[in-house]
Length: 291
Image (tube, rainbow, N blue to C red; front, side, top):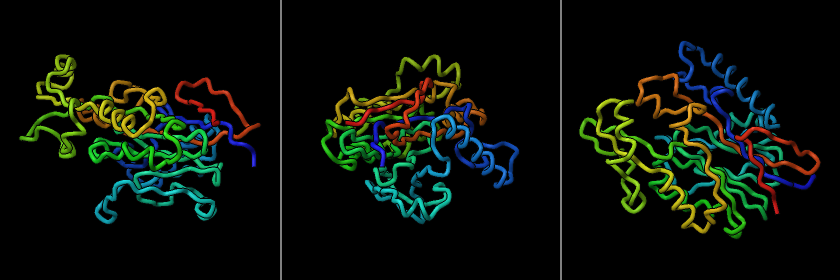
């Protein structure tokens, strides 16, 4: 097998199209098969640009009533999994984290996001990577703090690439609800909740006269990553999805009552092998050299 030379981390944009088949993201298209066809075309466009097989993308699913949440769960994709499924999008695994190793060098792992962060952590020495969805609810449960130990190895060998997400999430206080139900861990959100933000005046012009609680997801997320032993200078944070029109944003769609903003973009990682290097002029594709 060729030597693994780099990790390649990327995210899609609105230009690539929806990376989810939810009918809310395809106004006027009720037929599920049509939505699946469109989503596969969007994946192919991204795959051609980055250089991977669109059928080799593996992502975990989030907990639901049938699959209750168990914090810190991790799943490692295997060669047997890849052989069994023609399209790994069809493989349903419920976990916080998915792991990529050199046993499956042609697989891509990641997650489809909007305003919640996906965290890709890479150990440059062991040549393993994990992808962990870190929404506000996951931050509240201190999932980001588990990322370094879940990946393993020396934390000094770990680099992190955080997807575009809403750095500061505006929450409209209404119907007696002063904050989201997932804001319940006082220690996690210490110094991250603000009702007097500098954004208030402009946001009231934009969103209307609401009482707005500003939740600093970025501060809470980075604090946990650093406290886990990852060096702050080894953490790369991508753009603010709420403020950047190149990205879908469910929160922007809700606040502005404009469903066209709603959707999901992809954040993923793959290996680049020696002799197969490519140059990427796109700012949303980034390489990390292994040791």
